[in-house]
Image (spheres, helix red, strand yellow):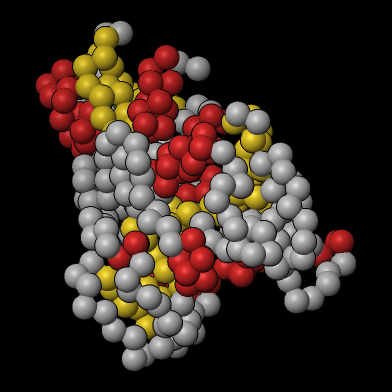
Length: 347
């Protein structure tokens, strides 16, 4: 792989999780073997990576090359097409690592007609950055990651609802980084009642996610800790049209049907590109049975809780044939001070 294309991919990785419904993209402008401009798409509505890199390069972009992690866009969104900027800057060569399969038209022909050499160099490392983006953009929903902390026998709590601390403090720190990498974190009313969580990110310069609460009944205690922290918005989804709140950062969203699909589509319209689900068995099980879970992260503590199955993280009313049950593949495993972190993708 070209070192310059690798730099562009690394820039994209650095902004992963902060671009909302847009993909993370990095770009590097090179002239006579020297980097003269770099850029990354920092947030939705901001300049795209190619534009930032070309602005930095200025006149030095004339006759140079630009390396991009994702195929330059051809459509008008909140900003003009990137290919326009590339052509007007006088770039001689474009190299990109992943084709954008969501584009209705591809810019290769336009660029080549303008006398620009275009190279597509497929890079699996970059492709993993955009796999979920392509899927969720077509569905108009966020990428969904379900996170579960549990015992070896899959319990999120004891039969007496004790859940602190099943996993260790090192896992808690890892979860803070998970929240930082997502636009919003979703939970249910039951988890709020039992655990009284805040869902903040306690890391240096960490980004607090928008807190999303699902309560079809609308029976919410607004004195809980989560409502005392008013630094970030809290969006409540309910079917109770009478639910109101005087708290400034709380927004009540009343839907006739609080299905997962309806909530996810509404979140996507509001600019949420990456959603983390941190909830109890009821909400967790709904997401795991749906077609909208892209990733499952399990934190296992070396403990066996036993008791009933009330707090088993996955519960269903029906018994399914083995050929019909949700199937995952393990893509990564990690030891976190005697706890195990498994990252899985739904097959």
